[in-house]
Length: 271
Image (cartoon, rainbow, N blue to C red):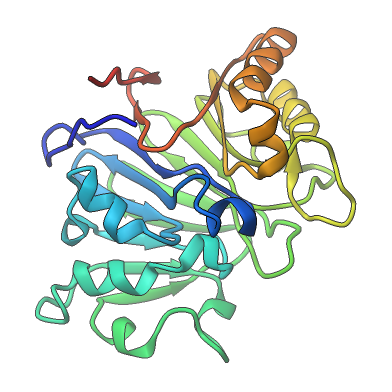
């Protein structure tokens, strides 16, 4: 993908897709990266779901993990948290600077924790995500966790309230009233769409479910990501175009290392 490297200045108000792979076959078969989402809101860096390779993919893109201010885990599955300890260790310069905040579900730090006690001791605070929780990141930025998703472990999506309202629906099966819970994501809605067709045995969104959600919420832009094998085989960019036609919403299929402008809601063209 693109060789463009970012800096502290050029990542300003951008979203970087450090991975777009979902499911064990794609993420751990390395068919696509799975390093999570890097948000920058006016200089505040938030790494959401730092999965396998997040540490390396960040550096390759010019993003230094010691810039990170907040780490948010939607849930404890390894394709979302495999590199969380690497990111926290880098964020604190190996414990030399006590800084940064981790937000995660309780089961991420309980018995068999995915976040080590050692790395948690070096950060300023660990905040346990609860359903309906609001957390103020700065005077003009807050994040809410509107509902507990339907997944194999405790899982939460989130909505950032800023100049734009930006939602991220992490792993989940479709459930009643999901559209109502994420309706405030009126500007940008990011959806983890692992399946092409619904599968009742797998608690992930399909393209059909994503279309229903997008069609009801009607965000200005929707981005599909976290693709499993059936989505990759079906060419996610073609699925995005079809959903866009049917819903009237601009729908984008994310690709590894894609840079998205959070102010203009457009992809940054890279050389």
